Length: 271
Ligand code: FPP
Image (cartoon, rainbow, N blue to C red):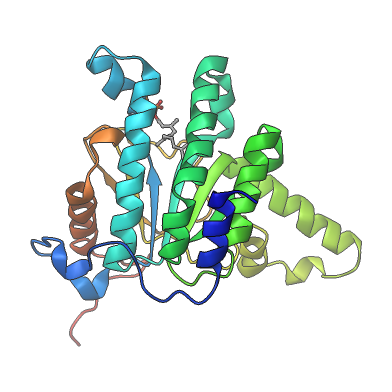
């Protein structure tokens, strides 16, 4: 067993002290209502490539800078009391990119899971994944499984990485599984309802995101969490993802808090 694994084992026991330095009071809120922090935030991290190209640098540098932005956002979400964070890290469509870029994204993911795991464990973060991870390169797949395994009992922020994820194929997967259950006589067609479909999504047991953030000014869902964002508030930030800082996150939350969520109903009227 290497030193890294030994250190992880040490952290496996009861470890109640968080090591991230701040709590929510140390962020400068500017109008944030701390009692109305979204429980689940989903993020489409867009613009790494353009960020790099604008600076005359290769796209890979943009992805590396994007990883730094991600680390800061994970930390901030935990500090301010977000319970679930889902990020679109690699879509089913991203396989169309040049092999060299796919390789960079995969090595950044491996690096993240290796270097940050101790800090995540120490902060009680639970890593989950959404997507067909069996199709990832074997070494990446194994690292992802290990990170999920190591953190599965953690009771802090649930950090859900969407990897080789596509919203439509997630729904197809759910439909196939439910059809199989009907065929096996486990449920009837009449019993199929929204709850049963949700239970067959990767996000089973995770509440729908109240807030979906997309960076780089693009206004598309890009096949992300198609079922789950039915009632999410969407905030589009102008920054490219590597420039998305904690302040940008707090801004997005403030915009969300100023929205009126009606879920198809009407505003409460005085009678
Ligand atoms: C979009 O930028 C971002 C991605 C394709 C993936 C997100 C990746 C990271 C944040 C860094 C790596 C982190 C992990 C966990 C793998 P883009 O390349 O589509 O940007 P563009 O639209 O400007 O080309």
